Length: 218
Image (tube, rainbow, N blue to C red; front, side, top):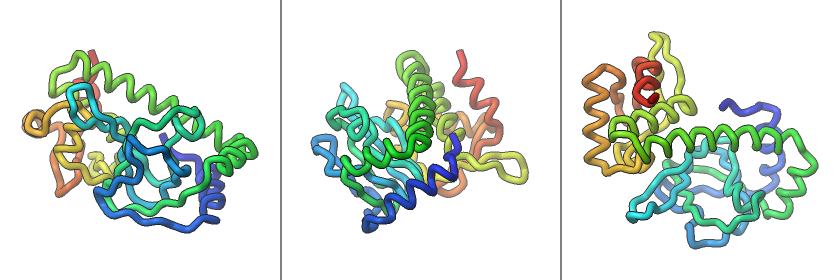
């Protein structure tokens, strides 16, 4: 879902009163065992929201992009934090005290409404992914993960293909699909052989998103 520019501008104005903080690629911003000490606004870079599955494997539940803030469940839902937030590349964030941010949201209902839409959209994507985690083959799971990522981070090129503007490893795809890296690589290889996608450096190019969608549909 595209971010509302007016909402992003308001968030930028609010958070810019706090000093910027940088994290290197792979750094953990918030641990799942931590009580967060503020609300983080992502100015630059990408941050993945992780949990640990029952079998002890890492699972990516969401990827935050510039203009988003976290952890929302803790900040607004008043739920204890149980997720890790990890920098996928070099990131720049601003951090606000929770109480101040809640006052800001109450004074800016448009920002809260935009957040609600984004959260609902994210829940819908999560439900789709969970459906494939429970019943889909490894190819279904990988296709579902890539379809969701393409819808969120894809950019159409002149030739009609879509490039995912986010560096992703096979391990990242595996962690989104809830499978091992080796299994994810095999599924990616099959999708590549079927001319549905290709890798271009650290980025994925989708030839036909409709074909990718068809794999994810029952």
